Image (cartoon, rainbow, N blue to C red; front, side, top):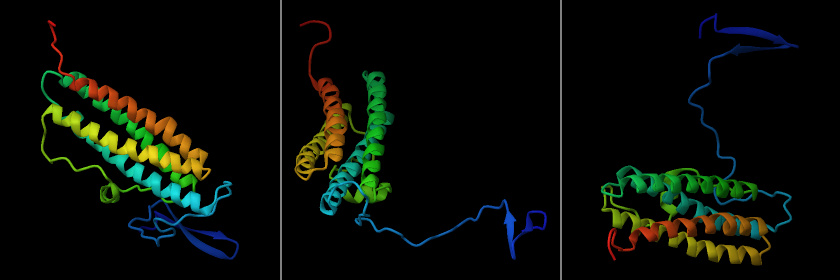
Length: 201
């Protein structure tokens, strides 16, 4: 560091160096392990919060993978329905991205650690991995529908259990946001797989 970048500043008896140079390549210790839950004054038991974090993280991972699947198909879709599906997939991806943020923030609100690394999400997700290449459009739609149903089955079960445990906030998030969004998106996708004539009945 040059003398022009660093100057000494006197604060009482202590002297410290001041610089506008960022401190790069820092590593710190892990201050909360994944799966641990901190105590927050939320009026919920430790067991309820721990269970909610576990279930929400599963939904978070599956939602993150569904988001990525929508983006993959948004980029790779082709054929006569390209334009409408290109736009639809991107719209659905944006709605899934909003869910990701809401679920992750709920986990943090409960004192847990939200899964934030896509490699971690890939280890936990229940959604099957697609091929690395491009599938035909009906297969893309079917794959997305399967992912929605996996999430919805898990969401219904989690919401009911969380309601029994008194976690109204997590139940509300799952029912009002996650379930309703996924049900609506599944409807939009499923209607594209109905084989109807375009011109004559």
